[in-house]
Length: 178
Image (tube, rainbow, N blue to C red; front, top):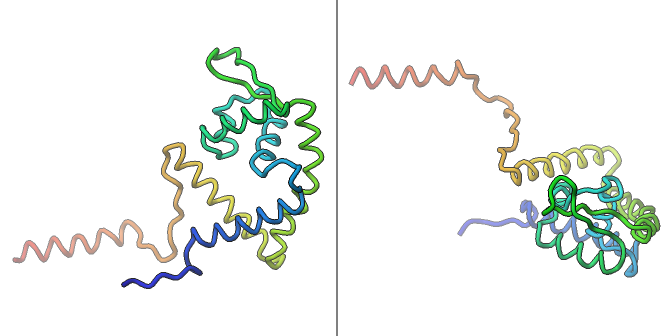
């Protein structure tokens, strides 16, 4: 049986980090504040007036059906409004309401404190690298969702094209001698 190590499991480590960040968020924002996903939606909509629901899916990474349910609940709470776009009568443009802006504004400083606390678990010298790695990971996930192959960086010590051809020529020469 193959040995499995939770300490080397990306899924496990990401879940632990997410749980810690969520606990910090919940403690800072409180039960009456927006959920982390609601905060993300409010933030994106506030900064992109008239964004379509499809664009909101791409901007937040929240899947289409979950986002549609969230928007419906946020519409009922009066945090968002929705109207048909001029460009496409089938598409909905989502806007933040005055009540939604108040919720967003009241939660923002608490969210920022929670995120600072999440990063402060690491030494200051590692925080920027950690954020670069998280951003690169999110960008790769966005590319996968868009059907693109994520950009891969060449590994150190990788053979150049000329070096790769040389062994192939040797193999051909050996086959020809047989």
